[in-house]
Length: 174
Ligand SMILES: CC(C)(COP(=O)(O)OP(=O)(O)OC[C@H]1O[C@@H](n2cnc3c(N)ncnc32)[C@H](O)[C@@H]1OP(=O)(O)O)[C@@H](O)C(=O)NCCC(=O)NCCS
Image (cartoon, rainbow, N blue to C red; front, top):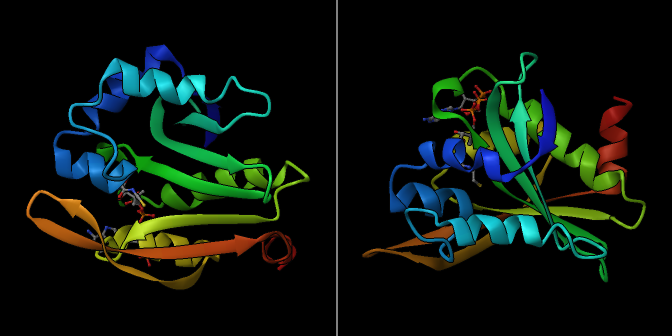
């Protein structure tokens, strides 16, 4: 699994992986709308062009350069915090263990910046496949923001998980 820069040519494939408002919110939170517009996707790329970047976005590709996933980092350089988000394994590729290497690649990117001491992520509490992956990779569960997202007529709880640099480094040598 390799991460390549997310570019305009990847918009159609990413859109094809997200087929409802519910899926968009599950993936990217309640501020994104379905269907994803070019403006919303371009904004992700633009946020990667500031110095330092506010956000880094990647398409994950397999050994044959076929897109199999997506992941982003939202970067808070003042506090040294990278928020991993918009994690996605292509629907046809799920259930094959690709989520772990995807997360590990995102962690490697985050901690390649010496100023980053903490990675964190938000995940809806019912998203078992995602939470199992995050636990397996070594994220710690910090707490739950109850009833924090409004999706149609539903309200979802958001779990907050994190991994610190020392924990990531310890995992590498285990
Ligand atoms: C979350 C996601 C990235 C996981 O990718 P994946 O390829 O299915 O991951 P894996 O095959 O490695 O499976 C992860 C774990 O979840 C379990 N799992 C998979 N689908 C599941 C399901 N529907 N219900 C319960 N557990 C499930 C697997 O058994 C595995 O756990 P295990 O290793 O303990 O057996 C993928 O489902 C996805 O892209 N979902 C849509 C977007 C999303 O929710 N992103 C996360 C936002 S925070």
